[in-house]
Image (tube, rainbow, N blue to C red; front, side, top):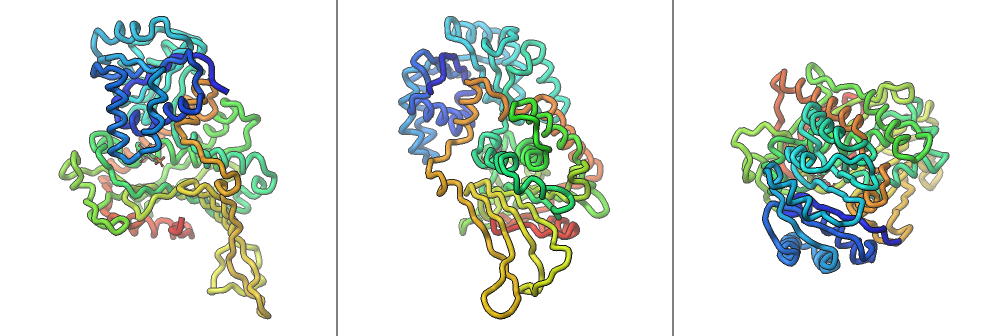
Length: 481
Ligand code: BG6
């Protein structure tokens, strides 16, 4: 069903994120008739461009990045589109914005696809408005660069809007696979009783990327993997895996449960037997191609100490999970792009069969998030023949092959939820704050002890110290994706 009328102001429309993700998602929705004829889309950016020029710029960007599918849908935006030049932080900004929005339908959605250093300038231009039917504000991650900055931005937003008007993005929550994970846990009887300290030996979460820093050094140099990936995506995945079943799927019920997990995380120790390892990619080969190390990337400081990899062990200190190691890792320039969650179950109390290969690999539930969206249950089965020997086999469920419907991009899903006023897939202020406090504490411990990132060869799964760290908990990182 097409969504009713609205005015959607995309701030930072000329930026990388807007061109790469948000505008293609809007164009795709427009091309399938998701927007009613009264809907208005405004690209707000510093430069004064006509709608045709702005679309031509996006088209050139998509051509450069090889996204032909998105190029084909771009013309669908033309009937809705107007543009406006807004110089945030300057005295003219508010009037320029007011003029562009005047007489547009409500709600007005202000989507801040901007560096968070610009969020307060944007909020300063907006009217105080306490109704989500009138105004919605969308904030991209990272929301600030630490807990203090984030709290500052939040205070500015709270002075003008209510919590239910603020949509804090973590695009991982828009991924179909992450919603499948929720459904797996909350829609089925068979897994939930097993997800406890009695049955689970460890939980592993990996988000590996083959890309390097690309042309984002200006941002990444100040961020690093802890702020860029752990603070948001990784901790959200952890919260969804570990939370108690909520009372309902309503936004605040879900967020209450995620928050309890985030508040009960153990901060990894950095000294003696370290529970956290950071790394930085050096020259190497990815998919057979030579790639430069991080220090040789354009825009990176000669002696940069920014981490492009992090692996750590934490615990969810609740009755359900106390003592179970949660191992998380993310890195750039890994051999390939994949994200998965591995739940390793404990061994049977008394093995009666002879294991093939001499050791027990036990049961695993593997939730593949990307590139494939599938579920794998690893079991032990008897090999044919006389001997009573067991070998690992897998039950596989590939969601794409099951439904045969193309998966919608995360941003499309999130934009539709913003327009329909659904908050479940967005973060609440206290979640973001708690995530920042966890990451700030790790960063300050690392800094206090002068611990910088260890180099790792591009095209590998990170420093060997991370393998040793996992082994100390009795786990092996899963490398096969
Ligand atoms: C973004 C990070 O939030 O997520 C990027 O800023 C990262 O550094 C990206 O590459 C990964 O997203 P996805 O959807 O490609 O896994």
